[in-house]
Length: 66
Image (cartoon, rainbow, N blue to C red; front, side):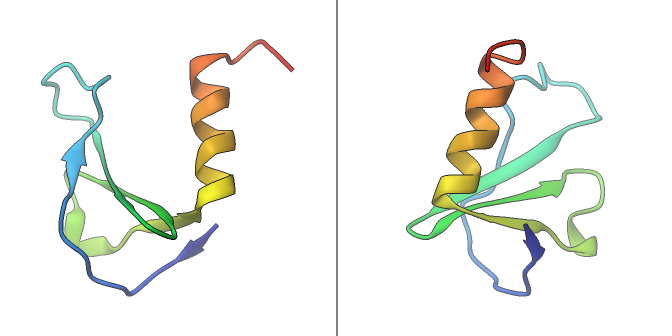
């Protein structure tokens, strides 16, 4: 995981945000995904490669499985 200065479009709020104000936004691209705070988008984002993103999503969907 690293901070990335790369600028891409296509940000969307998490489907788990339920319209709330404490949300994260994500955008997918060929090399992985980026995540940022929707309240402070100008502060940057974290970038994940495809494998890291898949592992993260697997953990979110099944937090107790190993």
